[in-house]
Amino acid sequence: MEWDVTEVNIKTDNTLFVRFRDGVQGTVEFTNSFFYGVFERLKDPAEFRRVKIVDGVLTWPGQLDLAPDAMHDAIQKNGTWVLQK
Image (cartoon, rainbow, N blue to C red; front, top):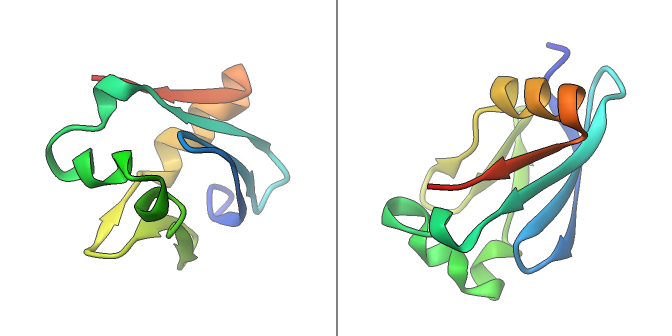
């Protein structure tokens, strides 16, 4: 699908650069308020850096992932997707 992630790079301890199959690219920014619940462990920079792409989806160990379609739409519109509580 066009929203499959094909590249991910870590920019900072809370920001990722992503590129999609259709060429759309931009950043995903995690605000501190987003690091709660199942995402709380990503406060740890070592855990955050364990991101990988599995079948076009950004994924961390423990079956933690982000919705690629919502990410694609936000980045296509704004160049960034800001995740906040």
